[in-house]
Image (cartoon, rainbow, N blue to C red; front, top):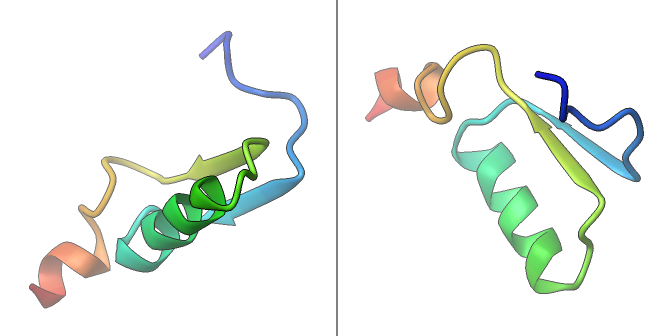
Length: 51
């Protein structure tokens, strides 16, 4: 985890469908300084159980 960013303009907590969608749409708008934090794998928490 040595390449984990020390700063970011946007921090998204949760890598479920909403968190991933926010990161995606920010990237479409040119926002590149974003960090997405997830405890385990992306979309493996509540999103996975609701599917």
